[in-house]
Amino acid sequence: MIKTQRPPNIAMVAPTFGSAGGQAVQAKVLADHLRRDRYTVDVVPINPPFPRGARWLKRLRYVRTVAHEGLYLPTLRKLRRADVVHVTAASYWSFLLAPLPAIVAAHRWGKPILLHYSSGEADDHLANWGSLVHPWLKMVDAIVVSSVFLRDVFARHGYEAQVIRNVIDTEQFRYRQRDPLLPEFLSVRNFEPHHGVENTLVAFALIQTAYPHASLTMVGQGSQEAELKHLGQALALRNVRFLGPVEPASMPALYDAHSIFLNSSFVDNQPLSVLEAMASGMPVVSTGVGDIPNMIEDGESGTLVPAADPSAMAKAARVLLEHPARARLMAQRAKDSLVQYDWSTVGPAWAETYRRLATRFSEREVA
Image (tube, rainbow, N blue to C red; front, side, top):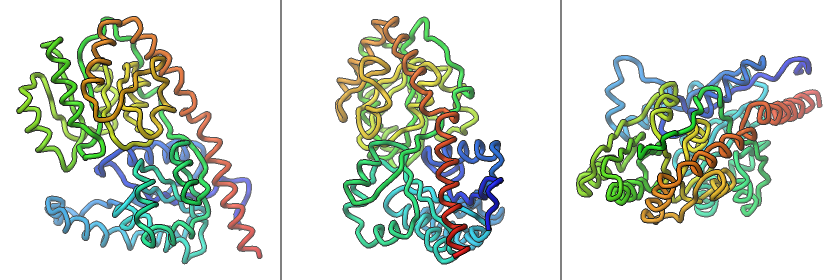
């Protein structure tokens, strides 16, 4: 029986850095905060490292996936020691390869299961993947999502989900006013079709017609990398850098070195990169998809533009550069809005959710 005076032991099934996207970053931030709050957190990586002699497998896409699965599945034995199993989840094949085995294993051992779902592609996933997703969702004891947007998506498909927002450690980022506001742009999104990074490049080409010395730094990786680099060459862009993936510890300095943040995604949820840019004092120009309209009040704490409209993005960026005082005011309002993503707000919600699940499991054991 679980002692009520101690926090429950958490097994967190999650990606670690090296896996694309913000899910790994958020899992680490959450685990670090929980440990500081005296939780025992055992992270079970869905992407365990290859043994030294087998690292060459990382270069072979499908072989790498099979090898990772072979390394991952045996580690699920660790779930037997947990009071609560916290399973982070994205969509499509990622859901089948990582969350599904963890759900099945935790269910077999009678552990309470918390599914922490974060993909902006949830609606299509839930609508079109049928028996590959719904039977397993019915096994979990709680579904937690980071946004009202995702809560509403799950509700349309018959599931109750609790909203606990992403955590942003604002003290990790240096907030500064951009004075002067320079045409130094930053994009931090992986190079996948739903992020629409090609529209960022086209918008930047339009910006460079008015600001020839403008610069753009692209952080990310993905299936479109070669295509995007070719597009940059075809557009004759100048001062564009593709940095690839950047370690989380190096990101604050990168935000600090730039002035305006651009995000062109078609499909999204609650992107950490946008929150981090806001914490750093960068004015944000973004498409208004997913939960982003709940993160940014258009014209007040940032600028929202239609998806797939690079001319609108370029125009919005030029307006910021032409009205720097207004841009700085918007950035300050954005920073002030981040209190809802602070651990002082988010932490108690996680504590109550874990306590409720652990208590339910304890009562089940007694019965």
